[in-house]
Length: 327
Image 1 (cartoon, rainbow, N blue to C red):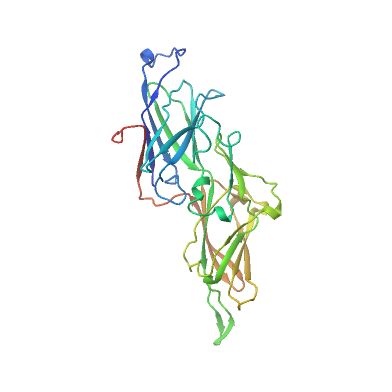
Image 2 (tube, rainbow, N blue to C red):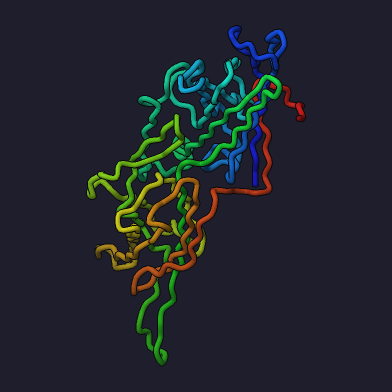
């Protein structure tokens, strides 16, 4: 598993009205903030490292009251994992929440009342746009002046789907071809017909959701491309989609091939893709192997696992601290 540690040396003090004696004289205490990204490795959907000017947002609550910190912005200017931002001072008891990617303006609740809207349509499924909605989130509390350490463990709040398409061979009987095979290099599109592509990310709770009442004609994720884009038995670029409960417990996968004579209509094949418990769950990576035959699509190997990449990669990130610090 690839981990990203975010180490901070911000300042931690107690309110003047706090008479707790575990911080004699209310002397400032250096806070140590660590963060890992769960089963995943990075905040970036398609990269194995931070990019220049990547940003996270941190907010706080004291009891049930929001503040004093709202959407505090931390940035790694050079993309080298060293983050800088406004020094944090907090009063006990306090809960800190953190999310990626940063949205809005420091000091102002992100999005609309903490909800960030996103679209995961076909034109958004590119390596440069996916990181803008590869939402991560965590919440931590229970800090003390004697042990002012915050351990964030970010988790992916979206879902990931990867397809591998497999060609089929022609079938013969006594040397006579009775059924042609299908070469997946002739594919020009595939569509997840019932999928909802619009939704919101709640930066307060970390929940991503879609509107279950989205009209049928507004559902679907159709990825179009040119012939010779799909390579037999090689994974396609992954999709990042909103977690959602599926009507009927599945979605229809329909593919389109240009295997016919010029000017003829595209050939279509389809099948149902069932998801466990009838829902696409947050933080899960679904992989499907699909064989394309003249009789339709054959769903082969399917796996569900945590969102993880390059398990041998290790990265260190530091916020406002000593890069040589060791706990």
